Length: 143
Image 1: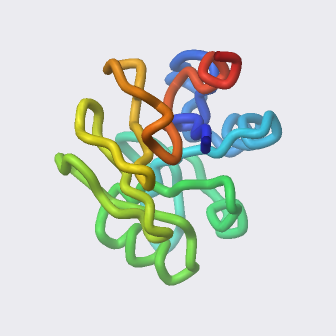
Image 2: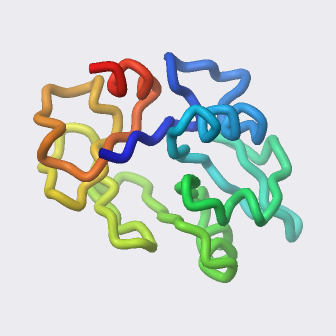
């Protein structure tokens, strides 16, 4: 099962660190994948949930452990140009990532190619999906 640290969180939410390069790299170093929020602003990639906060290098975005959540259409276009693993969604029940995974919003039906987003918000059989994206992946790893 793929364990994805939501915005780099492995043991609960830490809003002041989320999406930061160092914070996300620490999660990768612990053996997790990371989901990060990516913006394209003034010709540069940035991470940050609601706004561009941290400048990020292209080579980081292209790491196999990084799942890029494009926050706007231009970010999605630029992420596709560099061949990063990415997706875009707003209020969709499910969206397809560039590598063919079904990024599935909480409480919606899962498939063997689904990534269950925030399983802590639902009762779900995690054996029915390819992976999970959670703020508490360390707990899931230990279960």
